[in-house]
Amino acid sequence: MNIAVVGTGYVGLVTGTCLAESGANVICVDIDEEKVAKMKSGIVPIYEPHLDVLFERNIKAGRLHFTTDLKEAVEPAELIFLALPTPPGEDGSADLSYVLQVAKDLGGMIEDYKVVIDKSTVPVGTADKVHETLANELDKRFDRDDQNRPEFDVVSNPEFLREGFAVDDFMKPDRVVVGTSSDRARKLMDELYKPFVRQGNPVIFMDEKSAELTKYAANAFLATKITFMNEVANVCERVGANVDKVRIGIGSDERIGKRFLFPGIGYGGSCFPKDVQALAKSSKEADYDFRILDAVMDINQTQKTALVPRIKKYFGDSLKGKKLAMWGLAFKPDTDDIREAPSLYIIDELTKAGAEVIAYDPEAMDNVRGQIGDKIHYANDQYEALNDADALVICTEWQIFRSPDFTAIKNKLKEPVIFDGRNLYSLDSMEEKGFYYTSIGRQT
Ligand code: UGA
Image (cartoon, rainbow, N blue to C red):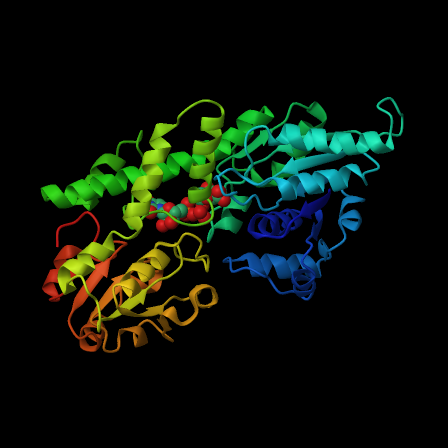
């Protein structure tokens, strides 16, 4: 199969690389010349476990190509993936200008049948808009009854990749959702995904609008699930219960499920915050007030800085002269992504109160440096961050923070104090080791 992937951000790059791995011929297009030059020379522009191996292998095998020329990518392709950014506009709704511009460009250049596939998270009705935009451009080149006028279909195929597990999620998806009302496109999509759903997980076909809403509903549901647990954790702290026990207690009911029940300092990243906001907004536009989502957004914002009042309770409101070590900056482990990361909100409040922060993160420090510069200090490793610090604040549950050398922590910190936003350690062991230890939803 010949495939074009327009946009080599996170989703585009993973999609293109994994499709090449299944044997397809893939050309990825991006307007960023520097990025394309890098990729051509074999450099993966994002951090994602296992992507580099597939990337290199498929470039070598001649199945994965890069270009800045849309036409070069589109001409041989039967399937054209749109993996373009849809950033939130000021009012929270998704900005479709990139997607619609490419639809317009396609209308000006296609010569034969194409399936245009929306991979970006886009509001309900976008497939129709893409269809209309492309058709309007074709109208300028061909009469509606012209034999030479190329046919095309627009398909909604939302992505459910998790950062850090994206390659695995693509290669072995729980399900693939395809929204299309065309039999011709359906057959091609079925063929495309066959190599990926061999374990019996389904390709679920539906109409375009349902597919578009499925993506928002999935992310909003998961964000709500996490937020619900954060609320339970907050109650636990007040009534003397332990959220770890409650989590296991409710998670063993299959209707609830064990996953995504971990309380912490809120969800972040590029997806949940944006998608919850966009679904709330588009529901309001459709004359429906999706009230639970307003509560989710509000609670999550408070939760992000839930450690700060605890730190102030311990040290007093002014943190002048206090040096705080921070482990973890990324919004979650196994990524360098810091979008909507709780760490940044915490840093903001701690430094405003006068504290000095020295941070360590295995992957995200360059990104943080790029965003906030020398507002904080950066350590070369997790233990260096602790030198002479008054306390340790944990913001991301990287594996290397899970079983640290507690003797070293105790020796390096001025006082053995840990504020843990990710519940990494057991209360008993921390008490035994002589730490003052605060976490989420468990009594100190
Ligand atoms: C999320 C979804 O999980 C993917 O299915 C979806 O494709 C993706 O968004 C997207 O729309 O592109 P991602 O943002 O990479 O993926 O990260 P998750 O692993 O889902 O974590 C999201 C946030 O929830 C993180 O901040 C994490 O710390 C938090 N979280 C997760 C919790 O606080 N508790 C949990 O139990 C699980």
